[in-house]
Length: 310
Ligand code: NAD
Image 1 (cartoon, protein in one colour):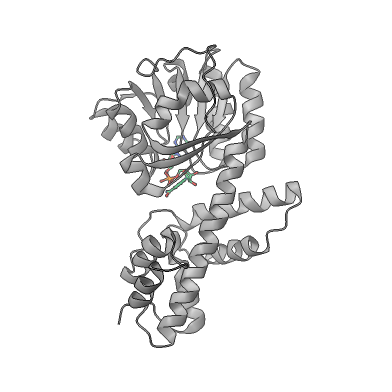
Image 2: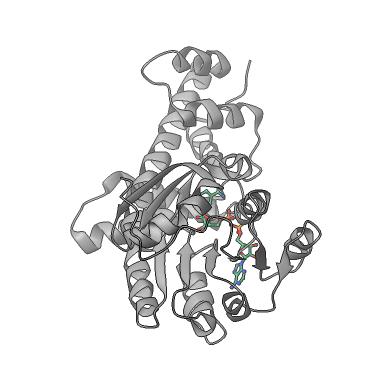
């Protein structure tokens, strides 16, 4: 939980100069919220259009992650997968190459906790402090600034960055040392995947049995089976709205991370393994860019039904 401030770092809420790398579904609105909170921002993304969009709103742009680090006191990354973060941070033109001692790097992507720990150690060898701070709450949470943020790493750096986190999220928790944020996020992704599968299976059952799945969703929302997934993704499923949102290929990646962690620590994850394979099948079908609620299409195929309001 929140710790007492450590006065090695003075609190300078508006004086941090923030670099932001990775302006996709999540990164762009998160960066925007930092600008709204008054932080000067330097941005970099692999493709130019989102950089130009934020530049028109007042951000500066940079030509490489290294340049972002040279011009910032705090660098945030919001990238797809573990190798992307490794390349952007530790690559030849990366953040570590450009960062001065005292720089804080906050990786808010969902990546492998073991790599997060290794990167934190590499950063520390250069006098750079790294926090892993993955998020939950989706695109809506990113836009509204209501993300849950699970943070691992140095407690004093966490305190220094708290005003930055508060510009992007609401439920902000310091989980422990390096990697603890990513372990928490892996647990989160297991719960979300299993819940989407449960909601999909139940709605396909109702549809096949001839009861309006929209009414089933509404009835279940009032009882013990209620959940955010039933509410938000149940509605998406009924509307056939599979525009991401959270892409199937990213959730497939997150379950791979959870399974790797399970293997590393000796925890068996049989349900996660099953859903990992199902998401993999959807990726193989060319549906990896759809929202993860499209998992329902497998249940529809197996039951030969369609989950639509009747
Ligand atoms: P995304 O694919 O929409 O965006 C990623 C961005 O990173 C893109 O703009 C891409 O151009 C950029 N990028 C990729 N490689 C790069 C590189 N080497 N250098 C610079 N830029 C690069 O992904 P997203 O949905 O924003 O997700 C980002 C992270 O957040 C992922 O780890 C994801 O698992 C996690 N996450 C996503 C959601 C969600 O609902 N979308 C929710 C919670 C967490």
